[in-house]
Image (cartoon, rainbow, N blue to C red):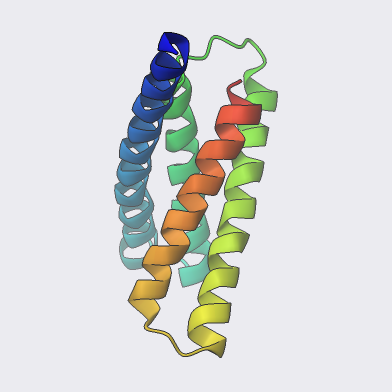
Length: 133
């Protein structure tokens, strides 16, 4: 019983940290995208991809160090797993937006919020179970 409570407490703490890191990733993503698009005049899709890549990389580093305290020496494999799950999460996010907004006509921002919540659960679960086990 005590072991389960402690496990749940650790899991909740890691989830909260994961969400904080994800929030910081939003700032990295938007900041890099803005600089690349507006200052460097890069194509908007190139700028957006650069923002996503930088945010995913910073999220990996912060989650490795702070959220999961990982000491796994196989950093490259771990990073590629993290990026792979992030890309799958991006596909899930776009699919939810397409299905609920594009096909059903639901409010875009409510759908985006729902998609973000679903992808947060996806990303946390996959990284907890497979990337930083």
